[in-house]
Image (tube, rainbow, N blue to C red; front, top):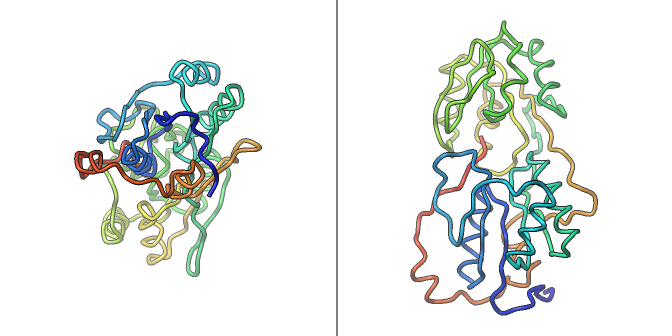
Amino acid sequence: MPPSPFPSPSPHVLILGGTTEARELAAALAARGVRVTTSLAGRVARPGSLDGQVRVGGFGGADGLADWLRAERVDALVDATHPFAAGITANAARAAAATGVPAVVLRRPGWQPGPGDHWHPVTSLPEAAALLPRLGRHVFLTTGRLGLAAFAHLTDLRFVVRSVEPPGPPTPPHTHTVLARGPFTLADEYALLRDHDIDVLVTKDSGGAATAPKLAAARELRLPVVVVRRPPLPEGTTAVPDVPAVLDLLGLDRAATRPDRAATRPSGSGAASTCP
């Protein structure tokens, strides 16, 4: 087990959050008596509850984040943002390098195609949009409400978009929005695909089990799936796949839970923001 990087008995960990794993990590750190602050981008109006302190909004780029790390005496930085939050991840890597704060990226593993899958991997949303007219006419678009502009020019296709909050313009002219918060079951996804006569699915490679049922439903219906691959991580970045691996890296995997924290921590905390 690696030694803990913390110089004091009351360490401060900053989590760049917005994922289920960020919420789970905050709970695990708080239960071990670690001071934890989770930073959210503020794109969801009503995020679920989180253990520890919560801040909302940007830092002002890499330099602003570096200043915050110094001012708040942060002992470790965990980037647990969405796998496609490339700008935030790059800023976090630069800020950690500038301040010498130990940093790790928490990224759940990406999806891999299996027997019966008909995947079309692409590297960007514009590339996905260019491919769509050759694959279908009724599209289930699950790339997030902030990426709809890449598809706004496809006037001959019909889209179904699912989002926690209504998407803003620009959007494709023929768009039906389903307001819902996951996770969704295989039965949920199968019913949506059938009810809306979907013949092609577009998704980002978010990874994880929570958002995978749509892929299984598409497989059962033998639908083509356009999968936007993840952007690469910054060079030299340390990445781990789950919360236990972060705790191990921080030397906290065997730390005893404080009885008082375990007894008083609220149960049933919701995710700060889930991937579509």
